[in-house]
Length: 274
Ligand code: KIV
Image (tube, rainbow, N blue to C red; front, side):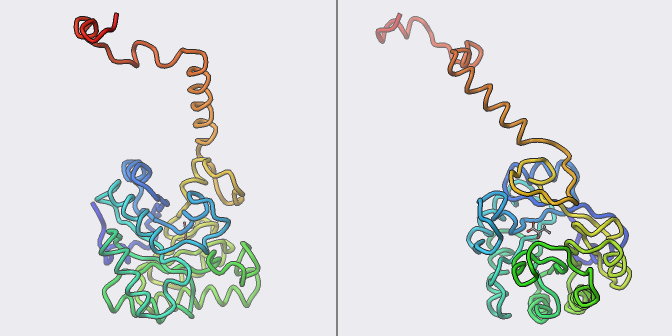
């Protein structure tokens, strides 16, 4: 059954399982597999839409994919990302969160950033929108962080991640994603805040883990970060299936009689067939 936000806030140490899902079949399979939380991440821009970063992702694209994921998993707790520059003011954030929650059916929004976005997160929470924070590597602003790099190795960036997580807790978020930070820093943050942390490339001592579906199943042809464990090679499987289909069409093996429809011979004769 879908947890309430109040229940989620109490899931410290619960080893929550979160997975991205951007469409009907994936959301359905992930929900059937028992995933606790689904995320319509703006990573869809890279793994589904072919952009080279998450920066170009639009609100319309997020709404479109969130609706599809919701149809696939009507009972799941579904989080949707507010994309880059869609939450530059409280008013804009509330209007865009309303699209994700009311129009597309998300249960919560996620927004990237630390202390600088905490007032926006607080405004969303005051407006009644459940918010998941996201600190450490924030892909939407990766270029100002020096690229897709481990965050929090030095004192300055480690303090920034801690302060960001604390600020998001103070803003009323129900949880915080910690992306690409050293495991000891993630453990420290997890011990310091009372809401669940969900790690990605953040070691084992967070309260949950999240992965990008396409990385997990081996469907993304681009760079796979070293923290990702590929549990399947779905890309290989699919390519093999398509190659067999093409070969069978070309040599006449498909479609055979078992994959064709019969017709009453009398009717066929009457219309000029034999
Ligand atoms: O967009 C996304 O998929 C994310 C996860 C990597 C946490 O933000």
